[in-house]
Image (cartoon, rainbow, N blue to C red; front, side):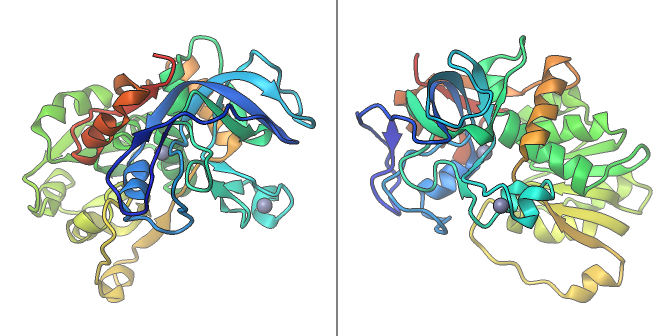
Length: 344
Ligand SMILES: [Zn+2]
Ligand SMILES: [Zn+2]
């Protein structure tokens, strides 16, 4: 497995630990693939501090085969291939758990942040309640990223943004691991999709993913004029915002009156100043989306299985190349998700 030895370090170290064994309600997976998320980068480099206790094994986007079961693990069987949601230890009884938003459970911990429990490893222990069987025909890399890279966008586009036919939708950070799937899901929901990127090399792939228009601009440049031009001066009905602070002001200027601005991603630890009147006088709703429920993971896997969406994968690397994978993700050079293959 790979773990981070210290809080603000930039190092990932390959180490050998004893194989994990399952406790009650837990299972052990042999990891086939684990996605590398920007979340992993900000936990490794110290930007994200809440709940992080180094050393730890990163990785919350996992597909693998069940190799051992504790007691009380429901219908899961050894040999089954499963994918996981991002959060473990949900209580199952609080208002969030019973209301269908279990990622908000006070007891939930982010897989890979708390203790030695992430998927950058050959074996990982998971709660049986956080896995979903992978349908035939969905590969390990696609299944691994189904919850985080795709499910987060599924939740943002459908449940929070409520994208409907006729809506114009701006996806920021569209060339990234989440954005590429946000574009597909907004298109699938009937939206007219504008994809924002600073990478010329990603324009073709964004059109292929379903973007009607690509808003390509230089880093630091205000792109809201281009969004206005593409929307008859109005701006967009919905923003799926994967970037946060670095694009806050141009994104704010891009939202139409009565628009729905869904905050999903934050690439830096920086705060942003804004005048609330700039939001409410235009009737804009600030909304937010985080993590994926088990029910949403099932729906995403079904969409993948019937080819309604496709997982956008940059490359699969061996576990020993975890630092290289982080470098690609941190620099925004990956086109879609990078995955690690511990068995490679
Ligand atoms: Zn993730
Ligand atoms: Zn709960």
